[in-house]
Amino acid sequence: MQQTEQSQPATPVAPHYFTVQQFTAKHPAFPLGTLRHQIFYENTNGLKASGAIIRNGRRVLIREDRYFAWLEAQNQGGE
Image 1 (cartoon, rainbow, N blue to C red):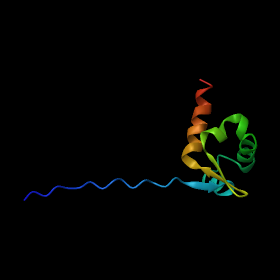
Image 2: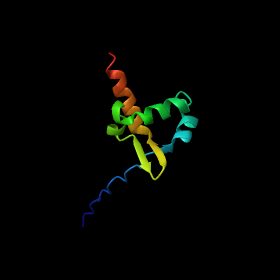
Image 3: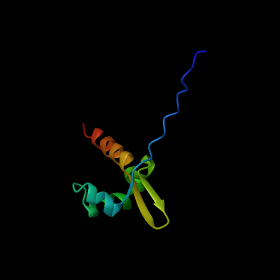
Image 4: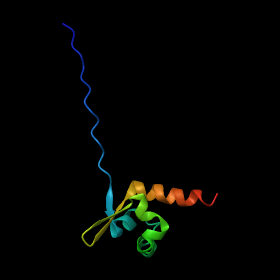
């Protein structure tokens, strides 16, 4: 009798969310004031549309991968 291997579906990797303070601690190149400014203007600068900002009650969370994708897209406009 021949055994067949059943492939298990890959477990999805949970996205990394950080508070603004945690994000600045992990990435010191982005000061607290800069992030707060970007979040304040999230509707006009495209940050909200990118899905990088999540609000949970009063807490603002930054999804790291989408934030950096948004940042790269901002840089593409200058080339």
